[in-house]
Length: 122
Image (tube, rainbow, N blue to C red):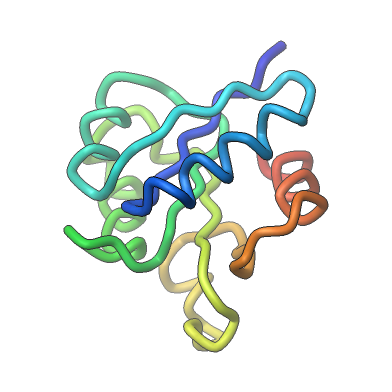
């Protein structure tokens, strides 16, 4: 059974890179959102097994998007695990717990870390 993943990043290069990495993982289908607003549209239309969100988006912050997802707006993905992308120095120790993210992956994303995160959380 394919795992459906949403990659949310405003960088075309980052999205292409992450999508290419996910192509190497069996049973994973990745879709892309170009930012906060695009992610909301995709999350309203589809249920995902995992959401991967860049922390810094041009049209909003990753933790703001996560809070909306958890609150049920957009509906359908409140219980979906989400991983935030960034540098460890971007996050305080309580950030993941307070924001509702399951974990984080440091940029630049390494294939093994992405594969492990998908295995654990999707």
